Image (tube, rainbow, N blue to C red; front, side, top):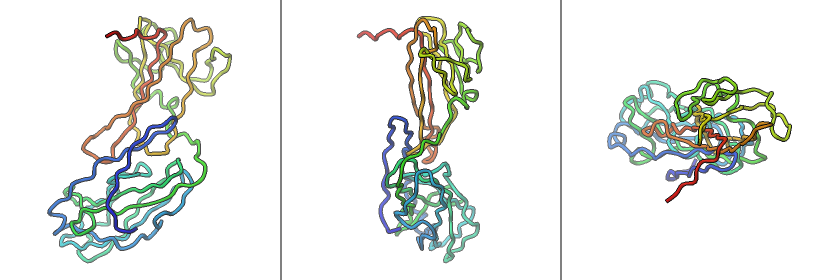
Length: 284
């Protein structure tokens, strides 16, 4: 790890890929420069630009020294920006690190699925939640820097069929139960493997959805929060059931930030919108 300024990466959302967007870095505190201050000593594991295969698990350990005037009691190391490389957002630091002492702090990470160059930036927080780091003003990060090489895998990051029962299903009239009743005019959703497409093929695992039986009726599912990072794989297949009289399908993938005050809680929300009747065109 060589001294540098933190860089903030940009969130990208590509076909079949879910990407992680970093949040803004914390402002430095005047207290940090005199009381809470760290010094980078060494990369104990995973030197900068180490190569990993996609989705490889690894442990990163840094050695840091307390060069401030305050002991680190109940301090945590927290993800600050860049590539998070996993769902871990914070780890505890060994309690009672006195001024002048060093400590090794480790975090379990996973290489992203997509090949590329990744850097994740970390800081400390004291027992009052104030962030501090390294550098003359105790406001700089330390980081993990890796290269992902090799062919991306197709491991499923989030199984929407398996988690359909945990999603919040609804339509224009309100909430719906899952699984619903086949043929319900209020709209319904069912999961299984017995459904047949119009081309007589049967998907291995699927959800059958039918909208509310009104003009521009729809059905929607909002899935639970899921921390995502660049390289996570998402894939879906849409089709109309055999003997369907009319079928218009629109799939919408959306995301939202669960907690705007935290730099580590960026989550995915997926909404599935299906209708048997195309929506009316908008008019000026």
